[in-house]
Length: 431
Image (cartoon, rainbow, N blue to C red; front, side, top):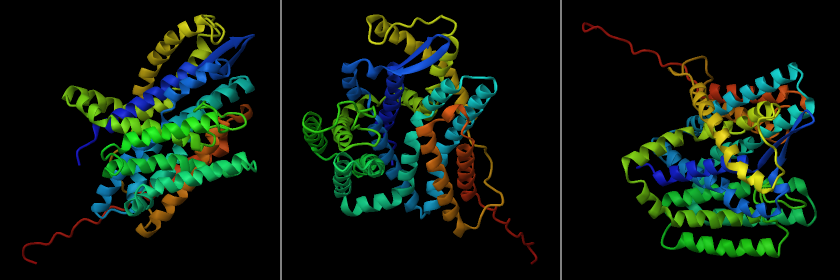
């Protein structure tokens, strides 16, 4: 199957928008010898409407569902098994993630040993780990793709519809009886619904005729009702008080995502026409190879600037929301871009897995699924814990979380290793 360049374009554009949004809405200050970070949305009320432009993670899950459907279908057609496919897809994410996680832990450990302020270190460690929330959700969806795709092939769009109804029921339990723990069920339900749309994009069941436009219009009407008459805020990226749209994800976020994805799927023919030239396809391919490194490392330049330029008095610090503050936003983003480019290039080199045959004392074939499942069972909560508490909660490196993650990573690798096949026995011509 020919590669869908439009899916690549959506992925690159979404990650670029995530980075820009994080940089634009993060305000770093340095006063009285202490660095701090502030969310600009807390001070610019009308800026919450900008989140309707900067909330693009639904696109990442849509494209992820499409790509996983393409990959698993081809793998399954070759009679490949669950373990080899999930292990390979997981390691494509886990190699760069491991490099980032280990580097971050080394950074906070050195900072702590050299006398860094505990509260500042905790805040910085939380900031550079916040975006890792995406990985446990997406890894869970990768592991579930064979089952979810089989459900799609049998029931089609009724699967994400049922997931949406379940997500609405979870919201009712959170808003009504105030059962916050129930809300965690919406992580696989809401983001998983978007992942299912990717399956429907792959087989064409969502893109026939005017279905994408009808999906966008109906969802936009639902979203308007939920925002104006429901309890949900317009902010599509913040936590919200008392009800938010992202932690956990809400039915309002799902309605927003359906409107957004419907419009983008309707625009696919025009997008494909923009990508007909080989030159554009080459540029897109290079950008697509860098998206994971960019996503992982984009908070680091913010910390570098906060630790160098602000204490030196080089960077001005106008109040949030003033015209001076807005005027400096392009300069701020430009400086961070200059720092991110070489960092991304270095990260891409460092995150490459070792080459060579996967030989070694690996487990027997029948135990590989168990080893892989155990590895993922360790990695998912470790990444979730990092996203919630950061790399240095209370100013101390989270060593046990790192140990849990590393053990899980080693198990995932071990599950993919096989003993080399014995060489064929050469027989002489006379035998």
